[in-house]
Image (cartoon, rainbow, N blue to C red):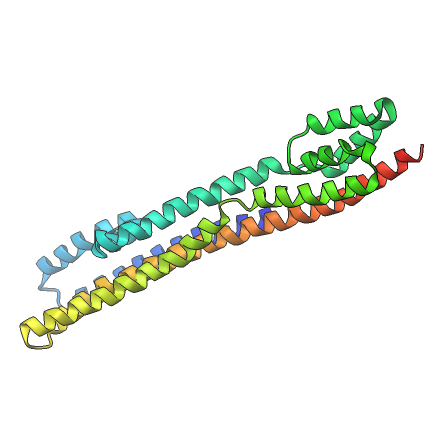
Length: 268
């Protein structure tokens, strides 16, 4: 289910990009037809318009975002880009770590039971030692205290399960920080940009639509990009939480099955 969610998210992003590109192309074509019908004599201005819109059509959404990013100013856009890059790096690291930590617990329990029947608890420990992942580590800690009694094994499994859960959630606090920080930086850039726009109005002594519109556009761009970064990181963050939740449930369920195996062999 989680893989399907990830695939659907990627497909939705690509569809959104292609839709925006088609809309931009349609609006450009409509504007060209209207200009041709209204004034055929102004061919020079039409050619200039076509030359100006051609690069935008060729670059698509990527070039438009790049242009708006530059217009927002390096002073505010650079920290927002830093939040995106570092946040994505942490998310990818967590996804790779969780993917490599996943274990087929059903098969592992079968191997432990089979090895115990053949070579005792030492053989079961060897199976856990040769298997990667947090579940195998928890099993190893529990089986290593088999001689101390079932109560000690249960406490050991529960305690080490909490340790492994902490390792699974490593660096997620930094991801939440960047999710919160990126829109905050955008809002701060907007407020500062509005103050600068009003300062220009005060210097000129008159409200000019050009001054107000230009300053407000640059100010609002920081908020737009900050919200985009927060939404991207939030999707990855929720996906990581779903992976951790699935692994946690798997660890709890498999730990109960391990205790059942230990109880069965302790009666022999």
